[in-house]
Image (cartoon, rainbow, N blue to C red):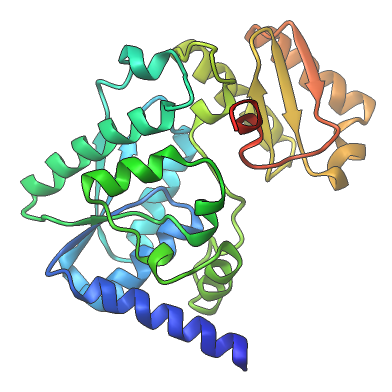
Length: 272
């Protein structure tokens, strides 16, 4: 009972913050965080809320398709915002501030889009757990004025999933996602070709039934991270050889597996 009371209190705090806006745009990736935020905004503001989704080489095609389906299910007006000027030098060199540079460009373009629709305010789905990792994109959001009601209400990821399940959101248990650039090791130039290699490699694993994994681009090496419970299935000879063959055709010279298993923010170890 206590946990439910805590969850209700955080939900009420998030809705109270949302109610302070006369109209609101939600940065919508289709993940559970932004979906919950969008659903809460819809409850509070009704037709005065819209979803905005970035479309760029950093976002897998299937993720954009999922945002369209989910926004339609929630009966929310949805805009796809194409990010054209992403490959500026400060971003492409893939330094530790890559995410900061990217979010500055992305949010500026999104603000331009929502202002055309007559809206002034925008929120994103950052949660309290995000503050415990290296997330320079959060700094960019704060600087440009994108609020984070879930974070401000103290929601952790597990609580977001619990509330999303309670609200019958279909993606409440969807594995965490991140942009394709997060798979490319720091210092290795981000190019459309490398992003395409990562997306294609991860599509191979998805087609084989894996979920909650990453394929990291380390240069000539693809490093596969799956949950330890999936190690045996990944290494079955026929499946293993199929993965190796497909990734080699994409341009990877070596294909390896991380013995630690899948973990978010793994590449941040080299800079923090």
